Amino acid sequence: MTLTLSETATLASSATAMEGTFLGDLQAWVDGLPEALQWLGIIALSAIPFLESYTGGLLGVLIGMPFWAALASAVAGNTISVAVLVYGAHGIRSAVLKRQEPKEYSPRQQARRDKAKRLLDKFGVPGVSILGPFALPSQFTAPLMVSFGASRHWVMLWMFISIILWGAGFALLGVGLIHLLGA
Image 1: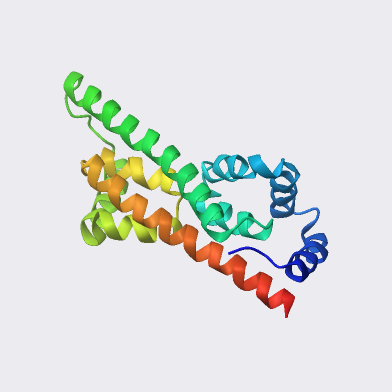
Image 2: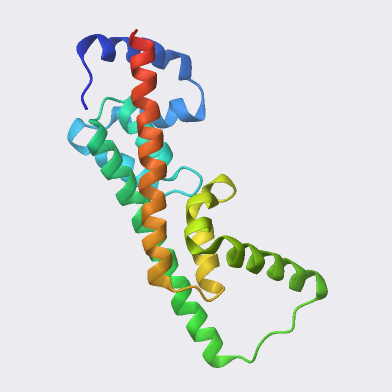
């Protein structure tokens, strides 16, 4: 989806309302990049925890990128950062388990680990992957699931699905905002 001239003008006039805010600064940074490189800006933003694909997709649409380009860039950035962490966590977990005997935890630490494990057991990898961004960034939840012994490939599959869903949802929100402001 691309913006019409009137939608772009409406968006530009409403962008001043976001000036001075964190999101406004991010939008200005990406918008200030040459048009051919804006997708790299969205990829970089989407790789950052707490910003992820949902912020990247939303900002991409708000600066005038086509929907598909904003979504693809946001998903790519978020997926790359999650993949590095998931496969890194698997390697670290494997190395630690080879070299050490199981660690003794304090009762408080054990209670926390048990609670996190119960949540993973209750919702499974799909549930934690899709619902996890309500509580923590995917860059935290994905390695945590792997550290509890979930398959790294299964975690990556469901994280990829989650990243697409969240990115598409917020990019569509951006499209809706543009149309709402243009009406």
